[in-house]
Image (cartoon, rainbow, N blue to C red):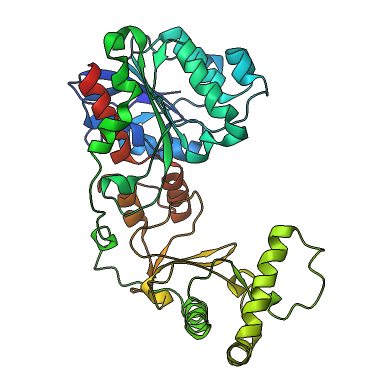
Amino acid sequence: MMHFMADKKNIPFPSPDNHTFTFIDLFAGIGGFHIALQNLGGKCVFTSEWDTKAQKTYENNFGVLPYGDITKPETKNAIPGGFDVLCAGFPCQPFSKGGFRNGFEDTRGTLFFDLCEIIEKHQPKYLFLENVANMVSHDSGNTYLTIIKNLDELGYYLPNEPLIISPDKFGIPILRPRVYIPCVRKDIAKNNADKIKNIKIEIEKQYTKTVASIDTILDASIKSKITPHELKILKMWDEFYKGVDLKIIGFPIWMEYFKHQGLLDEFPLWKAKFIQKNIDLYTRNQKFIDRWLAKYDSLEWCTNTQRKMEWQAGKDYESIFDCLIQFRPSGVRVKRPDKFSTLVAMNHQQIVGKYKRRITINESKRLQSFPEEYQLSDSNTVAMKQLGNSVNVTVIQKIFEIVLKEFS
C-alpha cells in the first residue's frame, strides 16, 4: 500500500510544495522518471513497483512506499484522477500475432494492456514510455507497431519514427540506447501535432558535440584494486593480444579450440565459423601461442570464462590496460575507453584498465545521472541491478522538457 511519510527531513527528494503538473510513476523501479519530472516542476501523485527491494529504495529517497502489482484491480483503483502525465518504463512482451491487425484486444495478458486500461480510463494529457532499444525490432517489428497503433487509437500523437537515444548524445560517457515514446493527447496538441511527430528534430538540437571524458565521473580518491588473480588474467591476455598478428579481432578468442582437429559440422554454423577463425589464428601464431600457453600453464588455473577473450576495442589501443574491461560469462571483454558499456542488471562492474579497478556504485550512479544525494541499496549487487534496470535521468528530463515547452 502506498503511503507518504509525514517527516520529510531525512528524505532526499520530498514531494514539492509547489508544482506545475502532476504525474504517476508506473513500473517505477528506483525513480528515474520521478527525479527527472520533479526537476521540471512535477509532483508525483501515485507510484507502482512490484519489486520489494526497489520499493524500499524508492521509499528511502522519495518518502513514499509504492503500490505493488499494477495488474491488480485494487492497485489500478488506487490511482487518483486528474493527473497530467503517465510515466512507465514497462517490460517488453510479445503480443498475439494478430496484435497489429486487431489492436487492443490482442494485447490482453501483457503489461501493456494494463497500461492501456489506465490510459483509457484517465486520459492524461501526456504519456512518456520507455523500453529497451530492441523493442523496435522485437517480434519482427510487431511489438512496436502494435504499441503505436494502440496509443494512436487511445487518442495520442507520438513521434513518427522510433526515438532511440543513448546518454552519450547528451555528453554522458556511456552507451545505453533506449527507445522513448513521448505522447501528447490529440486535443492538447491541436494544430501542433507536428511538434510531437517530429520531436526528434528538437531533441537532436540538444545533443552535445563532444562526450565527457570517463574521468569526469570517476573519483580520483578511490584506491581499490582488482584482485591479484584478476590482474594475472588481464596481464596474460594483454600479452596474448600484443603477441598475435591480428589487431582487430572480430571474433571471440576461445583458447580451448586453438588445436581443435575434429569436424566442425557438428557445431551450429555461427560457432563453427568462430572455431575455424581460432584455429587459423593459432596456426599463424603457433610458436608464440605455444610459448604463451606454456608460460601460463595452459590456463588450467583459470575458469572456463577466463579462458575466453573478446577484443572489441578496434585497432587504436595497444594494451588491455588502455581500455575498459569486464569479466563476463562470455569471457574477458575489452572495450574502447571513451565510453562505458551499458549498465546491465547484473553485477558486472566495468574495470578501468589504466587504474586497474572497477568503477564504484556511486560512479555507476553518475552514469545514470542520479544525483549524488540519491541513496542506493547497501548491497552492491542489489544497487547494480537497480541501476541497470533504471532509466537515465538526464535523457528523460531533456525529452520531456521539450514536450512541456511545446504543449504546456
